[in-house]
Length: 279
Image 1 (spheres, rainbow, N blue to C red):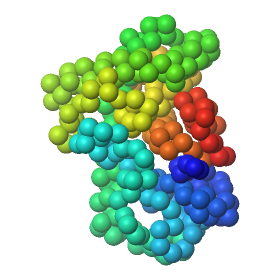
Image 2 (image 1 turned 135 degrees about the vertical axis):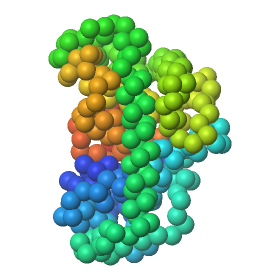
Image 3 (image 1 turned 90 degrees about the horizontal axis):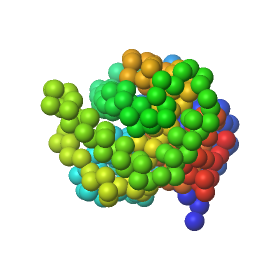
């Protein structure tokens, strides 16, 4: 069976209309997060990207944001896979004005939906930024790692994240302990009624596991470039990288990713060596 392909923004921006139509016909997946990215981009970029989708009902398979999928797993105590089963709409169409460049972005429902996705995404990034500030405790071999330090150390850490399930689970346990300390200090949970999953139960079929894997890879890549001392600080770069990593998480759960971002391609192939990568 051909897996459903998760499309990221870099692929949608760079691929031709026929390529997008071909993927959509085969069963491409687009997350609500990508939709939010597009409608908050420039008017021209929004018009160009939406102009590549097929016209008519159900042009692509829409799935909720990573935050929603995490909430699903918390509520159901079960993995969110297969992703295609999490579609929130039985039937939908993109407004013709999105491709024509005439859409009124004052629509209250759209504005509220985008605000909700942006807020919950920001909360997840803030939680991970706080947690990643102690990355040295998870990877003591990177203690005092300098900017552009020894590449083999980072590669070894990345390989362990990609292949050592128990190490990822142990890091998840450590993050939960750190999150609880933050909650005790008044920090808001990443979602309402948050109740952590048992680390021993999650594996590669869970969005919690795959998102942690992908974000750890992004954090390690950031350390390689900027040094371990830069983690935990306010940074648009690390926040952008962590958000991009969510496409890797979705792609690994689906088994296929369409991306033209070289870093995301490398991450995907590392954690999903048998997956299909379209560039």
